[in-house]
Length: 470
Image (cartoon, rainbow, N blue to C red; front, top):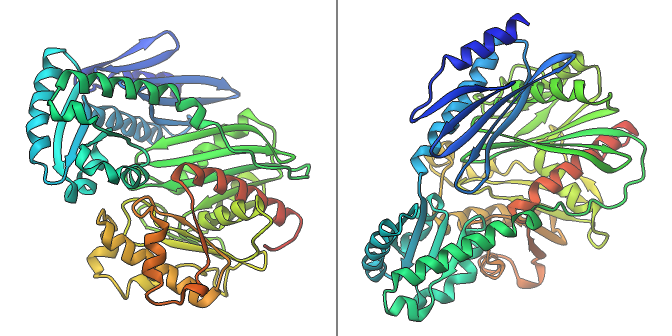
């Protein structure tokens, strides 16, 4: 086909820093010293392009998507984004390891010895040191965090906050003797253990028995401060029959969702409904979200229904999450789901009262950002980014206080990597609300969020098909 030949030739004419782009049979490969990328082409009545980028140091997917090849300009934009991901990985050529002690003085001396040893051993390790007071400002750029023995008592708290990092306590004897060789072997062993158990941690939680005969495509859009993940699943009679995750840098809601729907429509039979869970608020088919992600003047639901001729059910992703949580538990009827995404100053809420999701007159219930705009300087809530634990705890407490005061829930689910100590949160809240009025609280890990959102969105689709309102 002409468009395929033109696209392949265009890709092969591109370049990548410190690497090469070449044809390998029917696929095109991109190789650098840090990454391997692949572009595959499939003829499924229409042309489907699949792109992936893998980090060679840990085997982790950094970019994955697929789309129908029909718009050459759009296809070029996606390949350019893929190359940007490949080239960004060269900045992190080494496994970055951060040592931490009370003041940073002893670990600063130790890190010099470790870097010398790593160079002599030809290891791809880079060691740096930091004081404990600055740990959370620095740690998110590192793969491994090593705590000196004198702050070993902080291990559990640090491990919970840095949930996606390998956090280790330096053995006392090794630290006392500045034994660089032994510590490097210890780190290498622990990294290997973590890789070995990755598949076990990735097993999905059971979604429970949901009796229905519908076929639902459930999509969860989860933008983070560092990347965007769009997970989707096909449920048939409540069972998962296909599951996949798109990984990319920036979120363009309409184009990204269209790429997924275009591809799946040629791989699978038709659906009874498509459910899409996204951040922001949804009102009469319009999505209120950052204008860089979606044009607020476009009726998102109408656009997709006219194009794909299937019911489109769009909801806030936290409402889907709280319903996914609620559906797996019989004990609670009144739940608040509080989400404070990593790196963000302002969180969001979703509420279930007497078993029903609270939407409000304008489908805007739970948008606590309006409260926080009165508490923060404009630059703080416009720029979002924040890694100050005390400030995050303050914001989170205000948002939870508002929910307790208005809703009086039995349970509050909290997603907040920066504040993993429930007792600390309870103590803060108890300054303003009597202890006997405080609800139960549980943490929801980042790794659990997508599971809850996909399940909840599938249930919302079923409710819509049945003509019910949650």
